[in-house]
Length: 322
Image (cartoon, rainbow, N blue to C red; front, side, top):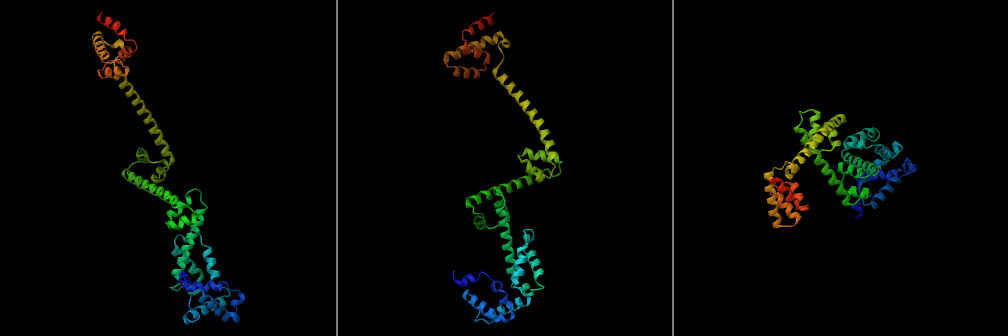
């Protein structure tokens, strides 16, 4: 980048004021003004600005020095103080903050309100906002700073450089934020469906749809007491559902196992034993015997005897025959 290209990055009026700020009190005194004009003009020539041979630019330098001489101080002394006093709350709206600064300074420095300077002041305020955001982000723990800058729509390249993090880390946090936003949108949709319901019904609906408790409190706007009441009611329902499920499972198990030995009729006992013997002729492997007996709906009590003490089947058969 050439000197001229670098110079273009900063407005001419501001570069002049920066040079004036560097002067000592003697440089602003009436007897030294011409020498200061020539000094600043030479410095700006060297920085890539055409001043010494440009009448309009020389007039701007003389005018700015004359204003500083009459005020007894450089313009930037007041301007920088006003900008430095800005807080994050002040710069939330950069345009409003710009108006505030202009109102503060325009009585002493009316030229600051000129149309060509206002955009530059807005940019300075926006940069100040960015600096304040980064300073705050650096003081936050964990990923909170990264989150804050993403929410403030700070350029990703600026975030990685300012917080000294990798692109991978930034993308990781960004994806989490996207997921959280998607969840909020989902919850908003769920709440729309129960907009006319009571708070208890809203909370129950969100719990049924696997919404986390903190998000329920925030988005449904309900008191934590409502959450506790619904959770207690649901806890009782869950216990009852579990009890009924256990009873049903026990019933199905008993049904699958068939009747106990005492509940099997003599006629059925003989038929079951005949079936078991046929199966045992086909296989002597316990697993296969049990599988085939189950398929034939033979009571488990008889199957257990068949695989553990098959001789007892003869006794049961004789007893059933009378």
